[in-house]
Image (cartoon, rainbow, N blue to C red; front, top):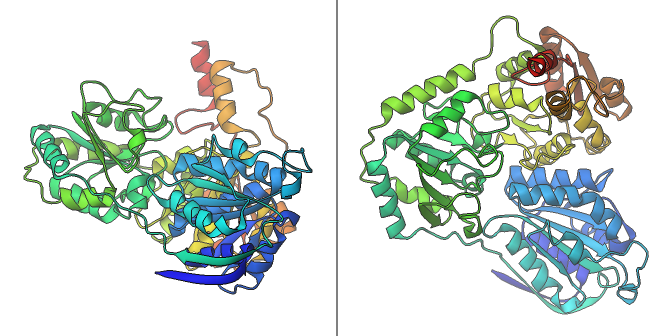
Length: 551
């Protein structure tokens, strides 16, 4: 479907592109270089501009919204200063394969190349971290290139696109603008590929599926579950793709994340055939690129052909959309002979995921309470930090877009991403988990949530330190603490100052009482968990690390 519009401004043409993409929310910090675009959004009732307190927070909101809604996230910012602030979100979208389009107001065309006020070469600045960057200086090309930006962000491996427009271009008039739908191609596998997979599985004794974000973006979770059930295939989730497969399913055998349990690693090491499905086999998923061995047969299936051989040379590379592949893998002439091994690996995973009933530490208690009281369709986001180890190890994720986390490991991500997710799923509970270090980096966006009546729940594990770095510090330089201790901050009181609600807890009962109140609240709520600094990770305390180092 195409629409032709005549004699409209560049700003109006961009808004028409937003409408064509069914963009409901646009995030950003207002700037004088793109005021005509804001004014055009003002005239469009189907689009709401969410004005954030910092461009970094806005970009995390857009990235989280994109993951939840499976539409492009859109961010607006001004010139080099706004662009630099939101670069963290662009990097996150790139590493997480999230479709996002950033619109930056550039300096006036007459000042380009003169080192004007807040000028930078946007194309050179963003090229290393964006999927594509373009600066549009001719008004007539705006509809063409903006639609190309959305198409590029969504096609193949999704990612961020940056569009820079000199401020004087926004108000120019376009004689004729053609606005068209941007269909995303879904390439299918060759019949030869399916036959080759069939032959490999016929010879397999211990096959394993590693499922990544490509499964989620293609909407193939249900097909993956049906395929795994039919052929008794054990399935692992790639790093921070927890909801790609329900954890209570007998075919699920664990998560390949930071600090993955030894039993989960053993499953991957024992496999004779590894099917990497919609994953780029990142550093974390492959445990520092050491997980797989040359003795294993690797089938790599992905929509991004550039990823083949980047880490491991595949025995079979299938360049296709995951949904298209899985729909054709349901009719293989294969009789599984690995049921006993798969069941044994499932049992080993269940042992690692079982929370202690008695003598729980507070992190374990929080996970138990969340699992007991959150509805199955609740969405959890998380920040970077060691607290996430307990979430990754013990929370029983289901399916249907219930988890959003940064594979980039960006701090400050959790709470702004929760804002984006709540806008995508207003009827669902959205909970973010953060440490005190990461939460403070974007805490100002709590006011944004309050201002727009977005009732998210933010759980902050406050141990008064940068915990992950402290863990590495204790491993390498035990007892020589520098830079990782943080000051005493009451996040419960800070939440009240930012027009939210706050609770401070230090027992399982207190946390559960606060959680139940938060679930009924109509405003953003912070639950500050006073965590024991000694509990530095799921596997060890600080005292353990020091003792191990001494021995």
